[in-house]
Image 1 (cartoon, rainbow, N blue to C red):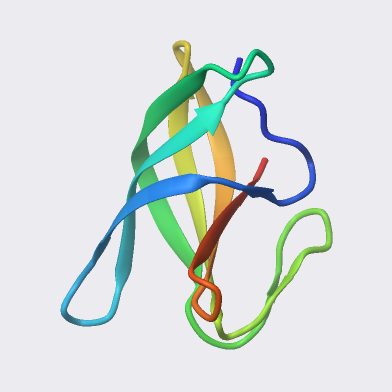
Image 2 (image 1 turned 60 degrees about the vertical axis):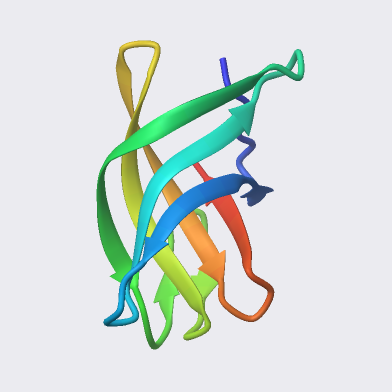
Amino acid sequence: MPYITGADTPIDVICQHSRDGSIIPIKIKLSDEDGETHIFRIGSYRVLLENGSHVLPGGVHSSDHIWTFECRICIFGMQKQIYLMYNAFDGIWSCRV
């Protein structure tokens, strides 16, 4: 099973940057406890925050330079909801369950 902790976990994301400035997450790459890498396609997503501030479940605060996405992925036949955050200042993606 892929390993995502309750805290923000840095991850690899394949995404599309559209000409209108929007970002579309397409796939994520996660490692499990044994270090084996798994790639998951994002089945659906919703942009929770582009500008302003927002509070995610677990008390995580996002500000205007952080894009926040609510995504659904399929892990071993089960739908899982995750939250992806993209820090535009650092160019780093992180994930929270």
